[in-house]
Amino acid sequence: MPESITITDNRTGNQLEIPIAHGGVAASEWQKLLPGIWFYDPGFTATAACESTITYLDGDAGILRYRGYPIEVLAERSTYLEVAYLLLHGELPTAAEFDAWRHEITYHTYIHENVRKRFLEGFHYDAHPMGMLVSAVAALSTFYLDAKDIFDAESRRRQIIRLIAKMPTLAAAAHRFSVGMPFVYPDNSLDFCANFLSMMWKVAEPRFDANPTLARALDILFILHADHEQNCSTTAMRVVGSSHADPYSCCAAACAALYGPRHGGANEAVIRMLTEIGSFENVPAFVESVKQGHGRLQGFGHRVYKSYDPRAKIIKRTAEEVFSITGKNPLLDIALKLEEIALQDEYFTSRRLYPNVDFYSGLIYQAMGFPLEMFPVLFAIPRTAGWLAHWQELLDQDAKISRPRQLYIGTEPRDYVPIGQR
Ligand SMILES: CC(C)(COP(=O)(O)OP(=O)(O)OC[C@H]1O[C@@H](n2cnc3c(N)ncnc32)[C@H](O)[C@@H]1OP(=O)(O)O)[C@@H](O)C(=O)NCCC(=O)NCCS
Image (tube, rainbow, N blue to C red):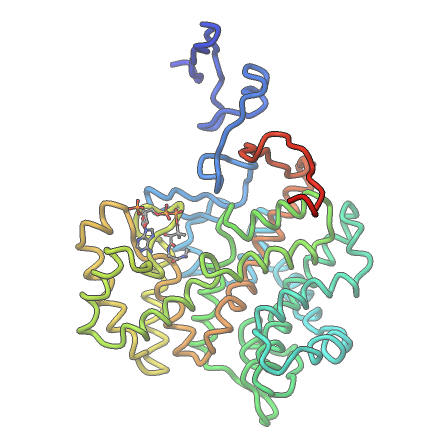
């Protein structure tokens, strides 16, 4: 079978043969054959904006792979730092490469004292930690002026290491300031997640040793959140990156995209929803109200997954391990009941709405003691690896600047009327 489609232009009767590449039609072919005809695709539901070798996602089959490795295998056998290396370099590291990588990340966790003293401490006492993170990441670009040399391989490598290393430090700092606690410096003798937990929770003890089960659970959550191809924040990263802005400014834009409740804020919305439902018995009535159009079932549905989100399955297992240490989150029973009812209801099944990654992640974070405001921040830490992998790929591809078209639907030309005559 030829890999093309034939279309007829009814205005002229001409038939056009359009080649299909990788399951799609390239805009360059389309534009040659039908100049001046635009695709109208708000939300980019039918538009591939780039080629990528990083993450494979099949939403119908519920498959997610980073660089060819199934997410289930990585979650079970790998670590976040190794996955970050894989996303950025395309291959898993050798033992020597991993040691060097871990060393570099560990020794770039400190932030400049002025980021802390002049910048973070300048926020209002009740500032939202995600707002602080967005701003602090952007501010980093003013501390590393070499970041502008985006085509210098060594500079690019340095900024990537700095960003991955400093995100947990900024995240924990944002939390500490927002609750009036003093800043905790990174402890370079600890692993990535244990160090983050130390910066979050340490009080007066000389060394904070996180519970290893909780540190591992966080590491798994970080693996699951490290990349998800062209989601809203990664697209923001690519769009801003395509203008050749420095990586800190690009990451700040990506963080801002992640802040919204339709993206990184969804797990916070899940907890608020479960709290509002309040008890097991109220679940059927709540589901009914969603079906009547009063709000949405938070943590359900996905633009791409039209079956069970593979990350949600892994998270459900991780939740059990966390609850064995922290005690069960009282909202879990409501969540399980909600899932059970929704998965049997024609409204949800016919629309192919299944639990997504956020349905259970919030329950874990809450049981581990993280305040709701920290949830999008916890998402931003690992997603930084994915954002940077896409940023690097886009520069290597010498991608064009992102600049979509629009369909103008406003008024026709008209005369200006002076203000006194309107
Ligand atoms: C993720 C999300 C934004 C994807 O949206 P989308 O692909 O644009 O899908 P649409 O908004 O077009 O929804 C399609 C249909 O399913 C319904 N729907 C989608 N998600 C729903 C939900 N969570 N609860 C109830 N109904 C939902 C819509 O009302 C719509 O129904 P209709 O055809 O009768 O109008 C959406 O599913 C959502 O808002 N989910 C809740 C927030 C969330 O969990 N986000 C985290 C994503 S990881």
